[in-house]
Image 1 (cartoon, helix red, strand yellow):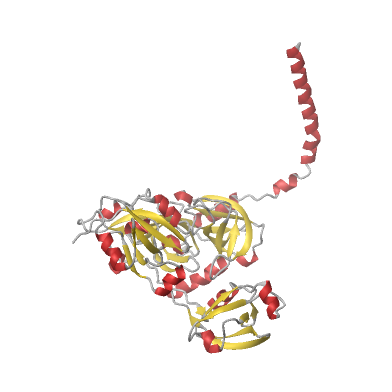
Image 2 (cartoon, rainbow, N blue to C red; image 1 turned 90 degrees about the horizontal axis):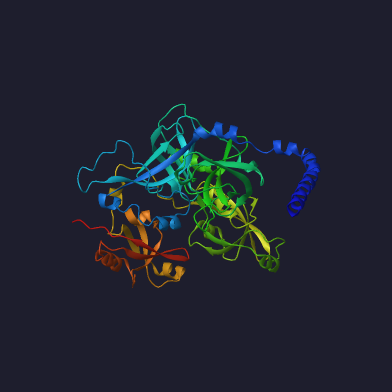
Length: 489
């Protein structure tokens, strides 16, 4: 009886559940049209996928350097700003000649990323950090054709690079209008996360203009972007590229729901300059600026907290010559209102050096206009492939580092008493992520005072033991381990 009772109860419960579900099923018929409106990316992927390429880079090193190419991979991931992480497992280029002698150089895998073809004759856009420091760049299409690419130019400030492969009638992407995208709009990314070619992920635009770059606002999305997606296209529902996937916000190195893309409109301006002259020229007026807070605006008689507060004026720079003073608030540039400080360097950067411009400033309760001549921002070093890049920048010491002494001003600015500045990083040092501009503070247990002492300590290191190097970047410091190379006479 007990068993029968339980069975009856279960049957009754099932009937009740079935009855309860009946009106729900009927209700579901109403919004069925909403399901039809969900995006189907299959046709878009089929159309655009062939124009998305895999990019892998190699570096020329001495044979003994190549033996430790797989060390400190976790440190690489920490130091890499974006996605072009080294992939030691990638195959070597076919037909690579064997080293002719012990001191000859060999190619070792350096990184992997993505890109997309913008013209039928082989121009490709990607991120600058994907090809930074590469000796050779190889591009692979979805049909498995592989090309050796030439770096036309690279711009670190916007993280945009332009490549060229020799080919005709190549598949290409249609360029969209990044100004017209809206928050909430569906977008997809195609790239090579972790070396997996032509992987498709989708999401929405989270915000249009995030101030994460010096010279351009970035598109924020929740599209899954991971190491290797760098340089790949962000595509709208029309199958048009609206951005270049460039950055992620992550505490682990993997996707956390926030990714950033360079707006294609801005990227094209950079690419056009790279195509024309191999580098990008930008204007500057020689001021350091900060926010105009609500309290400052009220105390100075401004109706809104907007503009750029001048905190410092460069000696003999364009702004000083025009009469700009510290404490001025720059309200307009060439008649365009400056809403927030980051607007100013972008506006000035887009002006051709040597051009005349007007700025409107607020000083002592009144506005006034000043005229100045825009100067040029010091250009980045042009990144190009070279027949023998190692000869241009010699290996400074057994750790692959070339360093210089810090100035007193640099020490004061970083609030440190000692250390040396990294000028170049090659071989093992580059592979673990150390890069020019970093500061070396300590080697093993010894504080670094100057370049001479550092090189002397490195020369005494045991090549059989790992050396701990305390590296500082920005406000953060981290120990990385490097194996010194045996020095040859």
